Image (cartoon, rainbow, N blue to C red; front, side):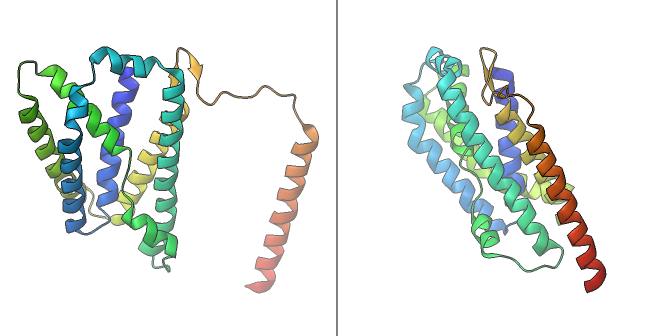
Length: 221
């Protein structure tokens, strides 16, 4: 479970940087300063957390289920942004929701930063908490603009970066869906008998809509 969460946090940071690659450079600088300020503000709370307490959080099924839901919602916003911004990249008109999601980067990156501060404090015993916090804050402030520059350097095409952003968002969503605690899947499948009538209705609806669209396309174009 810890390995899955570490991979998930890595993908959240990378996907956040990919999201910033579609904005101006100053936006990534401002977001980096916000991340650094968040680390400085919250590191006293991180020093109060024991390592066993964090392990208990990971073993708490209710906490992990709530986190899985938040991860799924975050991934849904990223996926919606991918679909909306694709219209702008390929010459379409931007909707108002595109402008709203342009300003949204990530909220899950802040719990990730809190965990990074906590793990760094545990990994460096005897070091001043304030010094560790300032080091992590400096890295957090520099990481967004540097990662944005790196992604734009490696993938200069917007459409290619958008595709990678979509795939990474999908991967984050899948990790949120399969997050398990003690072998229990967060979104467990409901065992129900096969509803053949509902399947028949779905096939009939698809057939009617497909035929209608085909006929309309033939007559209109």
